[in-house]
Length: 178
Ligand SMILES: NC(=O)c1ccc[n+]([C@@H]2O[C@H](COP(=O)([O-])OP(=O)(O)OC[C@H]3O[C@@H](n4cnc5c(N)ncnc54)[C@H](OP(=O)(O)O)[C@@H]3O)[C@@H](O)[C@H]2O)c1
Image 1: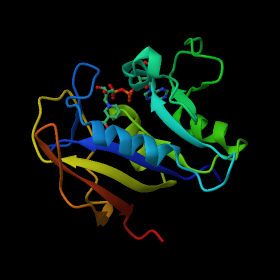
Image 2 (image 1 turned 90 degrees about the horizontal axis):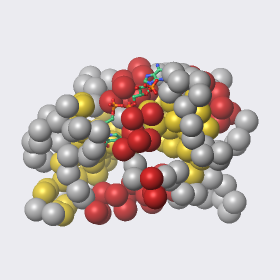
Image 3 (image 1 turned 60 degrees about the horizontal axis):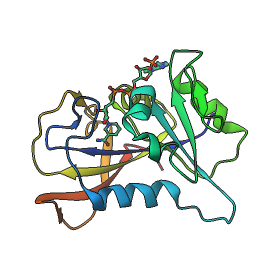
Image 4 (image 1 turned 45 degrees about the horizontal axis):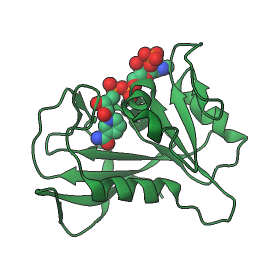
């Protein structure tokens, strides 16, 4: 049985998530929320893991990667793709989950991008989605898959405002789960 995981994403009103290899918006509060959500552990000395596609890895400014205090796993078909020593390379999404099995990570988060989200949402070990829903439309070339048929809203924050944009933090759980 492989590791269970949650998905973390920020979408615009049309499920857009990226443009030209970057985020279409800048929301400082959301970046903080992302960092706290994916880093927080309940046991001293424990660590969480983040799984991402190779293009998302490359979208993180070199000075900010690997994401600190988390096990970073990069999914790529390139068997010689160069990564820092402490970063795990996985040849498939399932191999990323398998690589974490022996490491006893506390929580595992899938953090994008579009290709990896598509694999994650179809996976039976996907438990929950943490979605920052930005209430505006942006020009995007990368999209989050349709999820409302398979996942049901569990909680929603009050609407927030940052950088002139309104957004809220929502969690969804898989229908029929728990
Ligand atoms: N809004 C958000 O929350 C959010 C979060 C993350 C990313 N993003 C945005 O999303 C965009 C990047 O997403 P993307 O869909 O273009 O790329 P991606 O999902 O980050 O990475 C795609 C890469 O993953 C590898 N891959 C995909 N499927 C695979 C498989 N089955 N087996 C092995 N490797 C596989 C391949 O790497 P190789 O080509 O090396 O083989 C592929 O090119 C950027 O604009 C980024 O800013 C947004």
